[in-house]
Every structure is written in C-alpha cells, then in structure tokens.
Image (tube, rainbow, N blue to C red):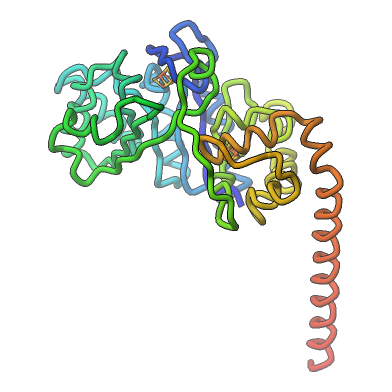
Length: 329
Ligand code: SF4
Ligand code: SF4
C-alpha cells in the first residue's frame, strides 16, 4: 500500500555538491509548477492512503512561496505530516531564519530534513544550520539532520561539535554516499562493506510515490530507482489509475516486499554482497533490464505462478466459507 508521496519539486540547486546523487546544480532548470504539483497531490491522495507528503529536489526552498502554497493546499486535504528537504541556504541570520521558519510552519510543514557534512558545507556555512537549530526551538517543527559520509570523510561525530547544543532531541543520522551522479563522476571513494543479506534485508521505502518534475513516478526517491524496471509511469500521460495498477503488478516491487534481496541473491549468487548499501545492491540488480530478465525471468514466471495459485486457493476457500454460511442461514 502506498502511504507517502514525495514531490521532487526541482532539479535546480544553489549548490553543486560533489556527491549529489541527482547531479543538481544552479544551471538545472527542471521544476514543477504550482498547478502541476496540486494536480499530483489531488490525484495521488484520491487513490491512495497517503499519510505523509515530502518536498525535495534540488533545493525546493529556492521556491519558498510556491512550496508554502502547495504545502498549505496539501494540509487542507488532511495530510498532517509534511516535510521538506533543504540545505539551509536561506538561514543566513536569525531574522531571516525566523521569517522562513515562520512561513514554513504556517503552511503546515512540520518536518525539516537538513544535511550537515563536509560536502554540503563547501557551499552552506555551518552557521546556517546552527541558526535553524536555534530558531526551530520556537516552532513545532521536527528536525532531522543527515551527515553524508565517504571513505575518509568527516563523520557525524566530527560534525556534531560544530552544531552546538541545539542538537539535543533532534534526529541525527549518517548516510553513506552512493556511487552515482556527481559522486560517481568525481570518483568520490564510497564505503563498501559485505552486507548481511538475510530475510530482513529488504527495502522499507517501497510504499512511496516519488514524482519528478517531468511527471515520471517511481516507488522511491533514489536516483537508482530511475530505470525502466521500476518506472511506474507518468502522471501526465498515464494517470494515477494506471500508475497504481503498475505499482501493484510490478514483480520487482512484489518480490522485494515479500522476500527481500535474499530471493535474488539465492537465485543469482554472482550478484554478490559487497555494496555500499541495499540501494547500491538494488541498482546492481535492476539497472540492466536485459541482464535482469536473463538472470531472473524464469524464476519470476515461477513466482507469478505461485502468486496466482495462492490467489485461486484463497478464492476457493472464500467461496467454500460463503457456501457454508449460506447453509447455516
Ligand atoms: S544541496 Fe543537495 S540537492 Fe543541492 S547539490 Fe547538494 S546534494 Fe544536490
Ligand atoms: S532499495 Fe531500491 S527500491 Fe528501495 S529505496 Fe533503494 S533504490 Fe529504491
């Protein structure tokens, strides 16, 4: 079941981080319009049990008033968790920070996803993040701080002392940079490990509709997802009904949700386990459709047969119990 919606509002960013998975820069021009975004909100909310909506990019807050307008609209539709990812470029002093946080808060945005690491801070002074942390204490807004890490880079523990005392009570995490986008082009040394691929190794974010500025929809916001095997369709061309059907019938999504990565590894040990994260393994699995079909085509047919047989069995049991109930009445 799809429970969250991510609007990747723009690919434009004031920064051009060496690790950016989408390779965003100030020169990128792709962005949604307010009416496009509201249409996507209406359609997605009407056909799914959406509980959370997030705005990201690029730097979505380059379009602060547009984001606030769409967030207020989303809030009016009953969505109580609305987040925005931002690099904090706007928090140059206390007055400016208060002004922006007040606008975000009034529009219904109640979660800010921030980044603090050596790559983002090449463009954004760390004092901006400190300003947000300090002023956010006066607003009911949840703060998540992510530190992107690579081989030899500063870690969260190195960044924390620079953020001051206002990190208490905030959610703080490290994310490993993936070898994709700008990180790949810049040969950034990523951290690879042998992953533990057991029954719990699965993707937990496949309950999302991530909509990009061109209207394309994928089941997660990762750049890795942007391939033929996971593309669910285009909001402007296919419409939400078709996208939902494709989501429900996509065998990669179904297998990942039901069995996790172990199912794939058991059938193709060459896939290996040395990756940065599960997303990196996911990419190795699905980035080449022909290779994927060659390795898993027959197994997927078998899995589809199992699903269909289980469905027929369930239908027969249902019919039997209906017949018994009718007999009793
Ligand atoms: S701030 Fe974020 S979106 Fe912008 S270039 Fe850096 S990583 Fe990419
Ligand atoms: S594991 Fe795959 S589907 Fe899940 S978030 Fe990562 S790239 Fe997306």
